[in-house]
Amino acid sequence: MKILKNSEKFSVFKAKDKKKKIFILKIANKKPEKIFREINLIKKLCASSVFFKKTMPEILDYGYFKKGLFKSKGFYKQKYIAGLTFSQLIKNKNISKKESKVLTESLFKKFIDVVRNSQIEKKNKSISIIKKLIFKEYKNFSSKYLFSNLEKSKNIYINGKKYKNINYYLKKIFDKKKIKKLDSKNYFLSKLGHWNFHGGNIIFPQKKNYQKFYLIDPDATWSLNDPFFSLARFIYTYPHDTMEYNKYFISSDDLKNIQKKNKLNFNIGNLWEKNTLKNYKLIFSQFDKNNFMLKELNEEEHIRLNLSLILCFIRGINSNFEIKINFLNNENLKFQNKGIYLYLLTILKLEYFSKN
Figure 1 (tube, rainbow, N blue to C red):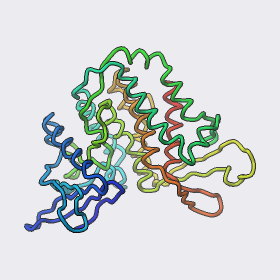
Figure 2: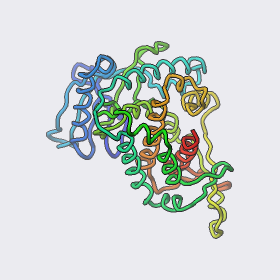
Figure 3: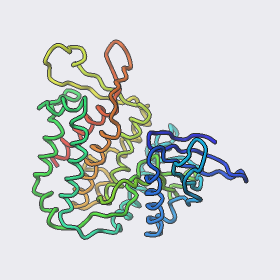
Figure 4: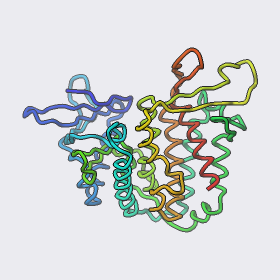
């Protein structure tokens, strides 16, 4: 048995049965009902469309452990898919920019079709519900150590440019006429979605065949959300992987002049190799108006994707919160902290959204 992933919530193993057939074993480390919600979601998704039936690996078995180290913990066994994830392909030095674009564009178009064909709940004030979800996540992180002081600051400098705090941008975005107009116009929320199309959950079993892929690990925590949240998670692949593989750094003058009441001044940068960064930027440049992905969306879909990205980023600040600051060297005080990194990145994106 080989451990593939271990977190506070889940442990994932690669194992073999008595016939030496490989399978995936996923265990809920805390609440067993979480794993059963995920099982039910996989079943519902497979029953809802041909797309999910073809792309989600079969569940072989599930239940509770009756004895041993994992006694009373929930689990499921799933068919093992050998191959490379989308993130692994993007990080591969041998994949060209052209191949990256073909791969990304192909996935994006397929995901748009899935999102557009989601089962929609007829609930009024869809934007209002998304707003509540966003401000719920905002409230969770803004009172925490490290972030409360940042949110009290009127101005935050990032890479030499002046920005406002997150609360300022959120209020500005939800005051926009086009967003208020959309709130009274259409229903677009769903109870059913994968909600987790990030690059580590997309597996390609064959090299150079980007038409065939599998999806794993749906997010079963949502009872209602915009289907475009799944697409936002795909775009979120870049910051997710940058934090996952510690390919970023932060520096701040405040650490050098801690006794002085200076303006909050941060610099953020990446530690990716040049070719890998080009591939990731191809995905994450959706904020560029000329990006091929935006050309696939109408105005309403563009707004919904942006709001889903906001929810995705702010939720990410909560899920990546850590008190520890990891210093990379002693001289220029470069450090890593996932929550702070994502907080600063969120400000950059919110500032863009507030102007467009």
